[in-house]
Structure formats: structure tokens, C-alpha cells
Length: 326
Image (cartoon, rainbow, N blue to C red):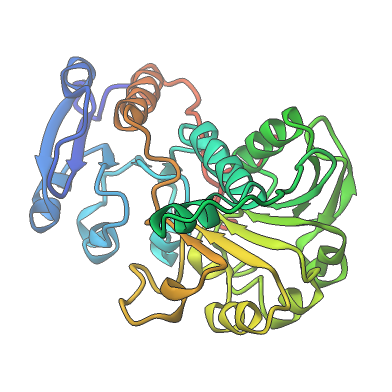
């Protein structure tokens, strides 16, 4: 697809510190304008595409008046609900994200959490640090039940990997429906408190939307089994943090493994840091050694499609805030 003047498309690349990979490949397909947030209005003047490598920058919202020629925005992240705003939603600008690129890595991380919990790796570390040789028995994960909240790309990858090691996996999504190749059954996330009591692990992998914000609240936590664990590899705001702290302190759930929290980063004085039944990692579940290049590959593929007028991959339903599962 050429622009109005019959030239290759103009791509404004928004970055913060490091430049995205594969810029040479992008330059073969388009005119490239590199910019940080303060230069975005000028870079978007006449541009056809915004490549938002600075994933969570609010610069597009703040400079929307300069985006009159945009036809497509691509974001190098999967969760984009916090980046959407009314003018963008109501526009004809096509919006794509990086759904699927990090799914396998996140699924591996979630499985790592399950194994860490079941085999008491944290307890072994504490004993090692205290130079104590203390034999224990651990849990077998085969046959244990997991509810994956979020049945999109990440949720399905988690389900596939979990089933491969013998876990039984159900899902929770926007509506209840029969099971499929990934999930034994799929519940409505609106009824989460009615179903969580049947599961040993509740794994959160849903996008953050108006419907999912605060989804795991005091009622859901109270309905979980006292031996169950909450795992969050989705978004911190899926969980009411104060309610989680109360549930962990009271023993109404056994523990939590959290790659994401709210607020983020977690303040140094926050009680989650010092709880023995909590595992914390700093929002890193999808970040493998080659993930940046994988994100770059996806954009190059989509730019190739755009330049030829072909359908783009990962088109976000801007009103839903995510890519619908086909």
C-alpha cells in the first residue's frame, strides 16, 4: 500500500531508550521516522503508520490531533486496554498488538510457578540459606485441577503446557461454553466465585478490561480452597491487592505467585514482600533472551502485509480491548 502521493508508507517509530530490532528491514518497506515522545507530533505529520515500540507511552493519546493521516497503529505489547481512548476507538485507524509472541514464554513461567509451589523450592532455598538438612515430602501435580482465567492466546498456551504434564485444566472466559481442545470446560468469569472452589491453582492470564479489573476480589478469594494457590501472569489490576493480602494473612488461601502486581513496581514497604507464602517476580514472564527480536519480526511481517494491502495479523477489537479468539 502506498500513501496518497504514491510513495512507500511513512512509519513513525516511537521509542524510549533503545531502538527496535530489524530497522533495516522496516526501511526496505517504508520511510522511517524515529522519535521519542516529545517529537511525536512532528513524526506523525503525514505518517501512515505508528509503530509504538515504547509500549505503554501515553504519547499518542496526548498528541492525537497530529495523527490525522494515520491508518494503522501497532503496539509491541499484548495487553493494550490502557492505551485505548475514545478518539482512537471511534476512528478508522486499524490497531494491532503483539498477541502470541510471548505466549509460550509466559506459559513456561506459569508452569515454573506451579512446580516451584508443588516442590517447595522456596522452602528448600530458605533451608539451604540456613544450612539445614531437612527432609520433606512434596506435592504431585499430576491430576491436580487448574482454572485458567483468560482463554486467549496466552491462556491456551498455558492450558496446552499444563495438560502435557498431567494437570487437569478448565478455563474461564467472557461466557461459559463447552470445553475444547485446550480446556475440559469453560466457565463464565462473571461467575468466578461460584467455580474457583473446585481448583488447586487459579492462573490469571486475562487482558485488563473494564470487565476484568478487580475480577479477583474478596468474594473470589474466600471461595477458593484453603490449599489453593493464585498465580498471576496477566495484569496486576485483575486482583484486589488488599483483599489478596488479607486472604494470605488469614490462611484462607495457601499462597500466591505473582509476576504482576498492583501497584507496580511494588513499594518497598508493601506486605507482599515479606510473606513466606508469596513468590514475586518483576513482570518478566514473557521476557526471554530473544523476545525483542520476535516482537520485531511480527511488525515486519505486518508491515509487509500493509504495504501490499493484505489483512493484518492481530487486529484488536478496539471496543473489547483485545484480539477476539477465532
